[in-house]
Image (cartoon, rainbow, N blue to C red):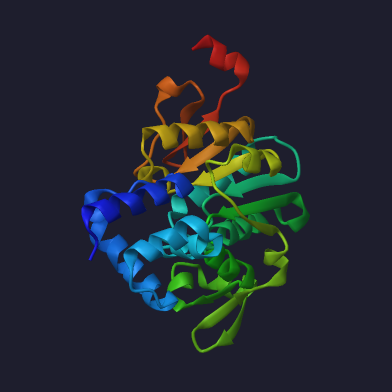
Length: 272
C-alpha cells in the first residue's frame, strides 16, 4: 500500500509533530494505522489522506493518536517508584512535592506515583502531579480513571482496595482522593514554552520516549526537561535510556539499586 515516497512523507509529518523517528522496519506498523484511519474517514486515496493530515488539525491529531504507543500499567518498573519514595523522604525540596509524568499515556504512571506519595507523605495536600501527553484520546482515558484487569494486575491488592472502587467484574475506577492530586495536559515535550508554562518540578518521569527520538530531538527534549526542573531535582528514564555525563546537565545517581539522574546546578555545570 505505502510506497517509499508516501512512507517518507508520513514519517516527515510524524517527526515534525512529535519528534518521533520511524525506521524502515516500522513501515508495516504505520501502514496498518494509516489503512485503519483512512477507512474510518471514508478515504481511498493516499494523496487525499496526506493532504488532510497537512490541512486539518483534528485529522492530524487522530493520526498521531493512532501511531503513538500507549502500552502501560500500574506499578510498571516498580524500582523507580521505590527510588522516588526514598528520595522524597531524604530530600528537602519543601512542599508541595511536584512531579511531572511525560508522556503520561492513559494515566497509570501518574496515578501510581500519587499512590506511592500518599503512602509516604500521608497527606495528599503535600504533593502535586502533572501528567502530559501528546495523545488527546489517551488523556481522556486518564481523566476518567477507569481501568481493566490488565492495567491493575501488578498493583498490590491492598492498594487496589484502598485507592479504587470496583465498578464491574473486571473494572476499577481510581478514587477522587487520588484523581484530585493529578492534573492532565495535552502537550509536546519538544515545545519549550509549553513546558515552561507548567512551572518547576522536583521529580520528572520521562520513560520510554527518548528511544524514539533522533539525536537532535533527544537533546532538545533533555534541555527542555532541564529547564523545568529545580536544582538538584531528579529525572527518571526508562531502563533502555540514559544521559551522557558529557551533557553537563545531569549526573547519574544510584538510588535503591537503580540509576536516576540529578539535575546539577549552574555552578556545578561551570565546573565540568
